[in-house]
Image (cartoon, rainbow, N blue to C red; front, side, top):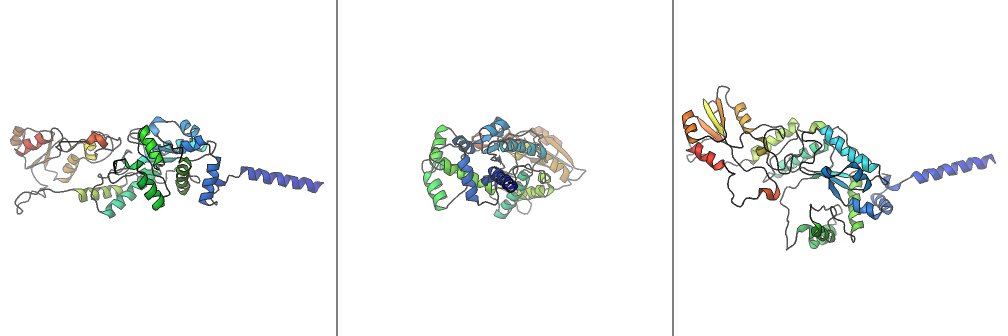
Length: 395
């Protein structure tokens, strides 16, 4: 009789262990087995939620938990605060992650951010020049530096485009091009990860859904395929085993090594159009020991203009309080001889220039910060005031 009691107790314990075991949470199991086990447990609402990516500025942790949201995005300006530290970013990311981990299935979120020219949405991060025409190895190093800084704020999903995407191809937007997205990318190339759609309206969503887009769209005919791809990425990123961010990489943000790399990128991206007609008497390099020089123009003392669009906010900012950095005016003052007098005037008149007997003038003009269609310019001219400054200084 005593033996029977012991055996029954052991059997009850084994049953209890089996009931607690969840296959998709077992890292020893094969990837496809984990995906299938989790999908078998998901409701339609769970699957639809996984296909959605919501902006952090418009949601709460409770929304993430209750609707099984698959991804959160900090788009331009969606920050914990305008000058948030790396630790504050980590705390915000973890608050969303902890909420979804407390849900029925505990599926972690992928947290994304636009990092277009460095970790450009974060205060004190290294801001690189907008990437156009660089050598491949330099671009790789910039990408690696950007990735380290993004990781330093607890984020694991980066949107970092480096070329203009084909919005219209063969008469249709690319995200709704079935031949390229499904037939070629997914079927011919066996692309097994996700292909996110950009923000769009109802018709574009329906079109993109039917033609293979996996996020920001809810297609009835493709839900299982889309969710399977999304979960595959989450498992491959080890989010189920390590969902919460830590502060081990916070010192990567704005590190001196990355600032030096940004300096190298600036030097390699500058284009000198003309250095005076007579090659025997070039204007550059300028003398550092001139008695008095003029620095002029709207962009000479404005970090916002200098960093351009998609810096802190989507459209960028104006002024010197958006992030840390060195303005061109400050750089000139640090570079010239201590006895050189540097005069700054945004838009000097011709009489003012003549009256001051400057050794030379440096004027900095350009376009104002913008992103996407906000920067369209049919005239291709210098922003208002720039041409007048040039004329006044040269005359």
